[in-house]
Image (cartoon, rainbow, N blue to C red; front, side, top):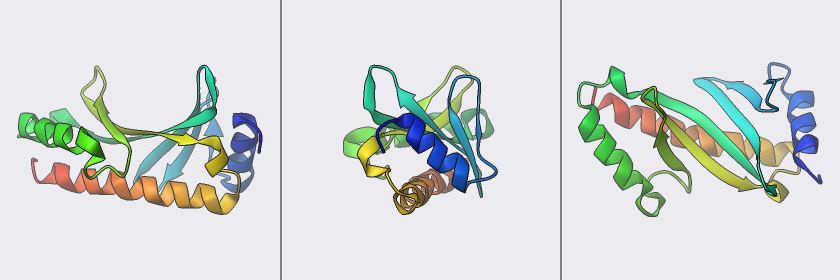
Length: 131
């Protein structure tokens, strides 16, 4: 695999429910939400993997959960190398940069998805503690 287009084609060929949006982002439905993959501007060797975790507005104790998220970002404690962030609509996302060379086979892509989804599921469970 030489570039993001090869990865995109691998995903689209093997995940019939996957789609590519107008910005070139590949979206793959997972059991508990959508996983997005995008090329990284100015770094063709990296891929951004991202998923929505939850809406902070749904949590009764959102400030306390936000503190837990900050702790989670500290040396990637509980995020397996990914980072938590909040967008302007108060949606919490988990995002990770993966080297393209790690995603050259279907098995590697499946492993990436499973690993990443585990982190998303963990943070959703943590969020329920603050609901």
